[in-house]
Length: 277
Image (cartoon, rainbow, N blue to C red; front, side):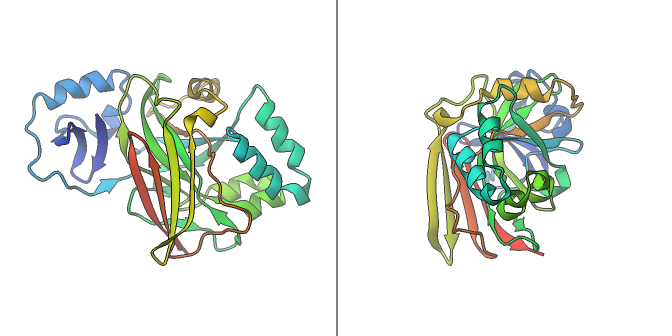
């Protein structure tokens, strides 16, 4: 079962059929620990939509925050060490990868998040920008993981590589995060064999293709949530990006007009054109 956010309100898609949720807002749904069971009962009371094509909005509600975990894949560790080598940050990221405590950082407020089909942005003061495809956890206020979606953690690698303290500027700006297209509602987490793939199109042709699987994720998602909730409360719930294992090479940077496509088995494909300014 998948939950989508449409202009008309929440929509559940099950077995290829779409059902509007008319008695609850998005904000009322994503705080429920029993969301999956609640929606099963809700769709039993409504008729399915005749037209199953509807515009997707980013699956995030007012008051929710997006946080992210870093250096959770070995490939990410290598990339962060490479980008920060001249600033002497290589050992810094190696220690983060091996440490018991994960790296967690604030990523976006709702107005900085775009949905599938909407443009992500690259900073005008950056020369080296990449998308980061990630499994995103949808978390209720209690700390329970209620679903999974796709995230794109846009990153300015030259800014972060210059100094690790510049991480917020490299990561947090308008259009810095994409989520969607919808939320996979499941009691069990995706299997370790779940594939995450990234394709970047330039002038209609693939200029980068990469793939990893959740088997390469070093941190247990539940561990990441536990650390995030240690001294933070989220009355409206939150979304946590779990890190990336697919990173383009050092000589690659996004250009305006590129199209970023991120797919995760069982969830779908998040597609975003690239813009600036």
